[in-house]
Structures are given as structure tokens and as C-alpha cells.
Image 1 (cartoon, rainbow, N blue to C red):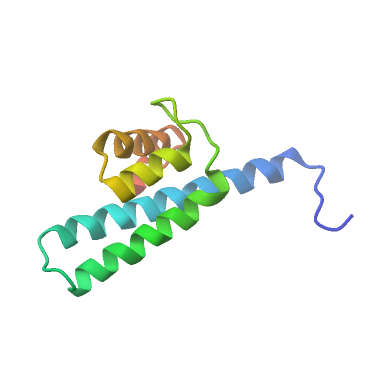
Image 2 (cartoon, rainbow, N blue to C red):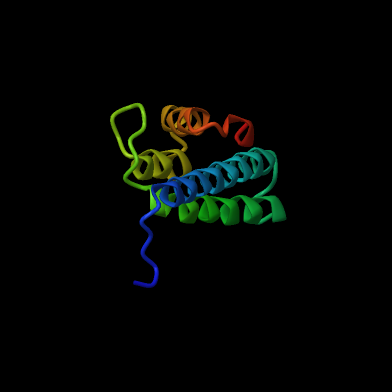
Length: 107
């Protein structure tokens, strides 16, 4: 049975790594977005922010069904925060990272 694991610890370790990766990418996006706020359209900062947004969305994908405060999934809240600039949704995903133990990775 290649690829199967009977060790629950392995699954928990994978989940922890996925959460860490997501929170890191979320923090990268936040910093890039903040740097791009003062930049002109088409600037390298704008391009970095767009790239960082894609990175955060990709990192969120395996966790998209996780519950977060606010009553929506991590996927829904992340999309609202990144695509719509929803500050409440961003607060919910930052809180998710804090509850996962990775609050220092976000701003």
C-alpha cells in the first residue's frame, strides 16, 4: 500500500506543515500588498503583490475546507481577503494562523 499511512502522527505533521506554509504565504502577501499600496501601477511592487497573492491562494488550497471564525471556510475567507480587500476576512485568516500557532508569520 504505497502512499498509505497508519500513523496518525504523520497526518497531523502534514496538516501542521500545510498550515505553516499557508500562514507564511499569507504573511508574504500582506507585506507585498502593503509595499505595493504606495507604488505606482505596473511597478515591481505591484507585480510582487500579485505573485504573493497567487502563492497564498495556492497554499490555502489543501486547507480550503478548514473552519475559521466568521462562519466561512478558510478558502472563502482567504478569497475575500485577497480578492476583495475584505479586512474582516483578513482578520479571520490571521486569527486562524494565530490559533494554529503561526501568528508570527503574519503581520
